[in-house]
Image (cartoon, rainbow, N blue to C red; front, side, top):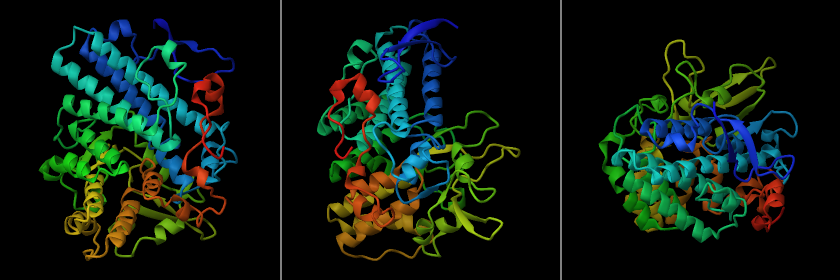
Length: 455
């Protein structure tokens, strides 16, 4: 395999070197070759998607955002050894020098680096058919916007990096929050214009126009742009190809019609990372379990409690709970589950919130009752705006638990993080609304100062 010199963006080494020499894996092809052939560009994107599966905000495994922020908030208990990454999140022991925060930052910016190489190469290429080039560029722009959205929600002001040129990226400065949001919107709106629709159930493996609509609705919720939330999701709300699976026990199967974007396991015989990390087959756990308080927050008639939460006792009779959204820990009888990243249930909840924030309570309640009805709950009755918003937050907690940090980001958006977490973890501090910037990155690039407040 040809060796090349590449920049791993803002990644520290034992010295202050900005380059390393490495052998490229099969799915990371040299820039001189990859953009001569659309199939090779697709291979490079496959490498990016494989990276998303294993590490970073969108991984469903032990080094992913769902587990990290589940341990950080009120969803998960960590049993890993002291000062491990999960232990640092669970015990709120995250400092600027922590391996936990450094790994999350580095992996995400490395993934952004990959998107920028793909975008730049496609823009320079004259050999790829136009429609294919647009689709591939749309996927990369979508991923660049989405990854920056997770970064800004997690770290606050961060650099919005749109180049793979190390002479620029090694000196990047932080952008203002409003500018980051504008750049995310530009990237994802452009992606939406380039991406194809994907109504084929069971094959939604790459970002589509519908995926861009959902991410834009997330951004607009954060910005309190209620009309834009509704407008950007109008098509999805009317699209019968994304109907909810009414049998809640099948909500995480690979052919679920409400799935907007999913990632397949690493091989035809592999199970999802989610099933491997969450599903308990013995007790006591050695990785994670669900917080009993989360389990107890469900009413007994909630089908999500029955179908998405399991329990197991250890030899002494102590009960442990676990997320059983993904149940397949063996593929002996075939591969039935993929890792669902985006699903229509979130679209419905986003629309409900926007309508209620606009004081259009009847419309918001109608959306909210779609989720309640599917969960087997009695219809939610008309109430005050404040009480309905509280119910939406509760339904988001019960619908999206352990999914890519949704609980952490929802509590932040509702300005409820402090009041919720102080009751769960008395050592909680207001500064924990953001993670610290990695100390090693500040040492390499002083333009990233100042450090986040409280660290």
